[in-house]
Each structure stands twice: as C-alpha cells, then as structure tokens.
Amino acid sequence: MKIRNYIKKWTQISLVFRILIGLTTGILLGVFCPQLTAISILGQVFVSALKAIAPVLVAILVAASVARAHSGLGNRFTTVITLYLFSTLIAAVVAVVGCYLFPVTIVLNDSAANAAPVGLKEVFSTLLTNMVANPLVSVSSANYIGILFWAIVAGLGLKLRATQQTIEIVDNFAKVVAQVVSWVIQFAPFGILGLVFSSVSESGLEIFTSYGKLVLLLVGSMLFTALVVNPVIVAFYIRKNPYPLVWLCLKESGLNAFFTRSSAANIPVNMDLCERIGLDKNFYSVSIPLGSTINMDGAAITITILSLTVAHTVGVEVSFFSALFLCVITTLGACGASGVAGGSLLLVPMACSFFGIPNDIAMQAVAVGFIISVVQDSMETALNSSSDVLFTATAEIHDKTKRRK
Image (cartoon, rainbow, N blue to C red; front, side, top):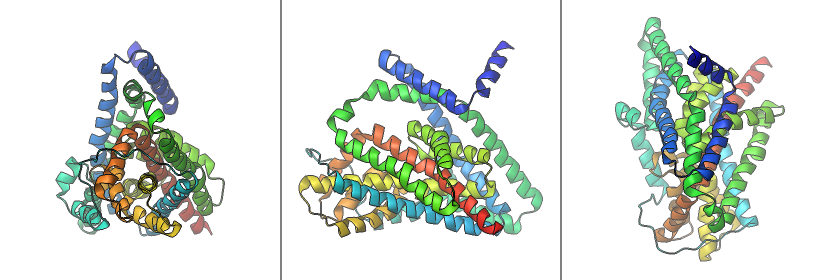
C-alpha cells in the first residue's frame, strides 16, 4: 500500500521536474561513478520501448484520424506543410550565413569507406521505395514514410466503406495504444537518467577540445533557429507573442528529444503534448508523424554547415548564390533524410558533390559528424521534434483565427 502511495505522489509531480531530477542524477553519477555501467540500461530500455510502440501508435492513430476527418482539416495541412518546408529552408539559410560569418575548417585525414547517397535522385528513389513498402514490414522496421502512406490509404478505405461501428472499434484501439504510450512516458525520468549517465561517462567533454568551433557553429545556428527564426515565423501566423508556445514545446518535447536523440521515439511524447495542449486529435495524429519526416530544420543546418566546412577546408570557393542554391538542395535532401540509413550526416557527400568535392573527402566530414554526434544529433533532434509540435499548434491556431473572422 505504501509503495502505491509513493508511486502516486511521484506521478503527481510535474513530468518536466521529474526529468530534471533524472538529468541531474545522471550527470552526477556519470561524473563521480562512471563504473556503474548498468545504469545506462535504463536509457536503452526507455528508448527501445518508445521506438517499439511509436510505429503502432502512428499506424492506428493516422488510420482512425483519416477515417473520422472532416473536410475543414485541408487548410490546416496546407499551412503545416508550408511551415515545415519553409522553416527548413530558412534554417539552411541561417547555416549559410553562420558559415560565412564564422568559417570553420577541420583536419581531413584518412578517407571513410562508408557508402552514402551521391544525389537527390538516389535519395528520393529510396523515399518512394519506402513509401510503398510492405505495410507490416514498415511497422516492424519503423519506416514512417511507409506507415504514413498505408495508414492514410487504410483510413480512406475505412471512411468510404466501413460502418460507424467499425470506425469506433479502430478509434478505441487507438485509445488503448495511446494509454500504453502514456505509461511508457511516465518512465522518462529514469530513461533520461540512464541516457545522460551514458553520455557523460563515455564522452565527457573531449569533443569540445577537438572540434569546439564546429560544435559551437552547429549549436549556435540551431539555437538561433529555435529561439529567433521559428518564433518570428509563428508570430506571423498567430499574430501574438509566440514565446509561451515556443518555450512549452522546447521544455516538454525538445528536452526529451535531446536525450533520446530519436525523432521516432519522440513521436509518442509529441502526441501526448498535443493532447494536453488541447489540439485536434484528427489533425495532430497525422501532422506529428508527417513532421518527423519532412520538418528537418536541424538536419538542414547539419548538412549545410558540414558541407561548407569541407569546402572551406579544401579551399573550394563557394559564391553566396551557390550557397543559397545549396539551401534549396539541402531542404529537399533533408526531407528525404529519414529514408536514408544514417540520416542527415550521410547526406553531406550529396551536398558536397555540387561543389565538385570527391566523395572520399566528403565522407571524412561524415566521420567527424559521428564523433560530435553526441551534441550535434541531440541538438538536431531537439530542434526537429519540438518544432513538429510548434508548427502543428501554429497551423491549428491560424486556422481557428481565420474561421472566427
């Protein structure tokens, strides 16, 4: 009985505050007790649980939402897709400006041997192939392009042919899966504890001494995008102070995404946040997984900065207009990053190819990216995932404001 009371009191505490407790504990244990490696299992289990339930959640919720959807959602989807793509483009521009103001070079030694896509054709070929992959395989392999495609098709089928009772059964199943997700999220403080312990005990602060300037440029560009660029975009749409919504998304979504370093694992967290904000379930259940695929501000920044860093290092002159064209290419490539093994880092050679930089040289920047990924990937995921909720909320607020007028 006492244990149940303790659990009840623990869950009544704000989730963010509990995560901060886990964060602090993880840092202290990582610094003073790095030998307690078993603690990292907590993080592995938490991320694995989120990744396992997320594909099922997306498939069921999207199908149920499309089946229930009313025609008024079309304007919201147009707005949110515009926000996703435009913000990704602007993020790439921010990265270009940052590279011109603070040019960075890196030491390029032995070439990396990994294969990577060399052009947009290969990226989008993979994207389209994944879209029509076997739906069961898509769910089991967390192929969100395929999950979205088949869930929308199934939802349309339900809308056209199924009885209301069948749609309600699917909707009830979606509620069951959502309840399971809420239980998993309650373990976030322990998961964060394990993830932070693992990062601190294994990586320490060495990356800041070897690649400090590059890390600062990446982090600075992402913070500028999150705290200045995106709020300006949101303010234009909702016509009021955007920062309460921005801070909420960064605190509730970005913090968790920073440590899990997985947009897929953060989809359930984002959907839970959207529900607590009071957004339309029929809308966010589609826009959130869609955002995890095409809303790639952080990926655009990573690809742009690393490719321009390679260009600066090898002495390739890149005109400002060429760099702006790179922004467009980066935006398109970043939207296809989820369909490429390795994500944004392995799209760096594709961007470098537009400057005539050989693949073996560009792949060395990929190797550097993996070295600093404990910071780069964490910041990138936090920016990408938190802005999924930010722009979903913005699109709904904008639509409601227009309807009232």
